[in-house]
Amino acid sequence: MIPRRFAWVLTGVVAIALTGCVGGIPAPDFEYVPMGTVVATGDFGSSGPVRGSLKLVKTASDYQLQLIDFAGPAGDELRISARETSPGCYDSWGLGFGDPSTWTAPDIPNKIIGLHLKLLVEPDGSHPDLVDPTFFTTVVVTAPHASDACALTTVGVAHLAWSIGPLRKPPHVVDSGPTAGATGVVTNGSDGSPSRYLIAPGDTLAHISRRFEITLDDLYYLNPTRLTTMSTQIDAGDELNLSATARGS
Image (cartoon, rainbow, N blue to C red; front, side, top):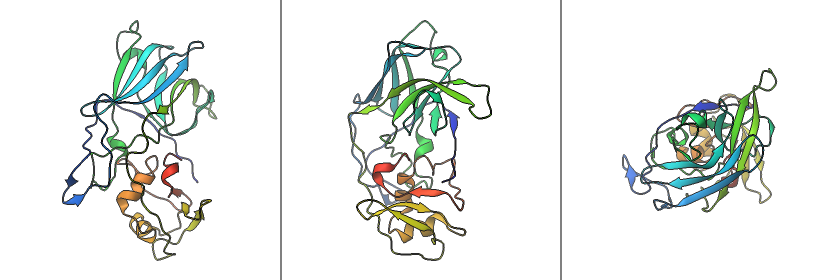
């Protein structure tokens, strides 16, 4: 798999509509999360350069990240990541939200920011308001590092503990065999079902989704860190995820 690194600085909020249909296309099975639900928590610890805890909360129209008793060096950046991260060189996919000390006055330890997750929804536009954030695993704080090999250093890590499961019914993936536009190599999981797909020259997302008897919408859902409203390009040698339990990989 060709590694891709993203560090997007985001502001604003995202509206979440959990029922109904868009443009006449039925929405996939999706579980409603009541407003005010704490969907995830995390803890940076009480010692070290970054301290405090966090909550991810469902609001009326978005998800909100709340930092509690937070303290960290000014100039560092907070990110929510889809992969497990440890202190040291930061080399992972994640969404950046800037320096927490600038969200409010630096001496206020409780800070709140809306998570703009529309960048992670189906790029075909069929269901632009359905967001399932449960593939995120950590919230990290990074500091600049003057090195070509390590541009950012992780100085604080809070592992997310989710109180909810995946919000969408997983698609049923079946490999119907190579076809024009989908001739890549498939890796099966321990249960025998397709888990990874190695993109071949000439492949297209539409043909790949047909090969596995799923919709484009399903393929985007399975690859939220790879296929977004900002990036739908695929290249030979890249991998796509086909397993609902490995969405952030």
